[in-house]
Image 1 (cartoon, helix red, strand yellow):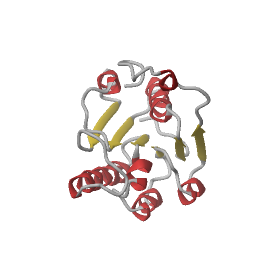
Image 2 (cartoon, helix red, strand yellow):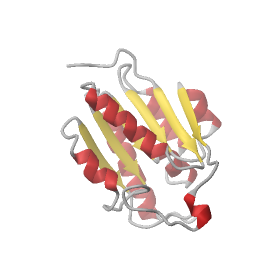
Image 3 (tube, one colour):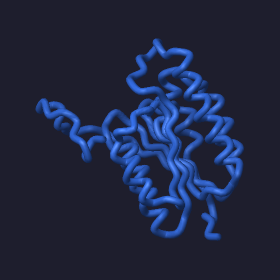
Image 4 (cartoon, one colour):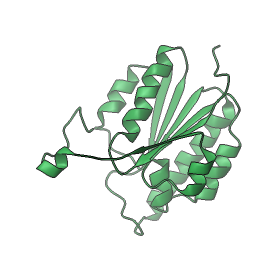
Length: 177
């Protein structure tokens, strides 16, 4: 079985779109080279995301699970159910990473889960500490902390220079979701 020689930690953060898209582009590249990718989405409980159907076409080398309720979480107003979903996602991430069976593990929106106070950052940092050496971990979400940035090997910040929303164009199926 093919394995990465060295698994690193990557972060895609920033206030612009493209964080999840970048991680999923890497998924496509990795599967194309024979690597396996496990994706855990935090704070996402909607089944209408186009990536869910698209990524199913990459099975069994790519698997995806969602941990979140439908709808939005407001900062400072997370419910116990929101927190419970995030903790379930973190526990699943622990299982997947500890198994060492997956080459790449993407924790989509986990940084948002920290910022929205669904998960303590210390638990995520502890998860990164137990990562086997050959497993690459990719985290996405806005507002990456200095501690997470310090821990990562690669950090990319998405910065918006122009966005269709500014012209009143709403999210489009197949493009934004």
